Image (cartoon, rainbow, N blue to C red; front, top):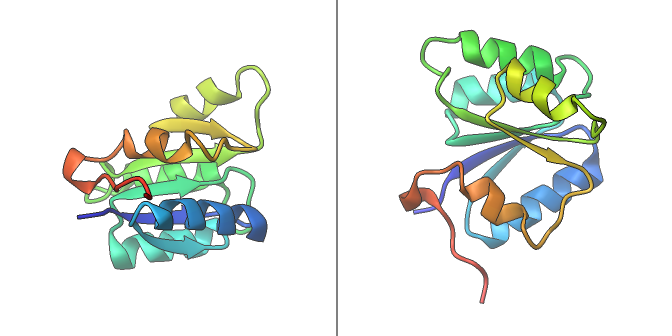
Length: 130
């Protein structure tokens, strides 16, 4: 059984790449083009894992994770940030804000899914394409 993964990303090319890679592993991928729409998706669909950009319109990644961690029924959902912020201190700032993991862009397509699936329960991990 694969996971339901929500990708919140305002850049269409990045959103398409993340969706493609996760889909090839068999995951059910949902997408949202900004944090506000991502929050609506979370409330509606209760994903197993969230990948969230930091710099987005309407509700940025830091605002999104604050809402997620404050919600009593959703605070335990694993959330990773996939961001272009890659200066010293950016990773610790994201983790301190409440994200469970951090990936800087550009991602490495070879290692991306293994890293992401490390945050899922074993039964929700996908299969590598043959």
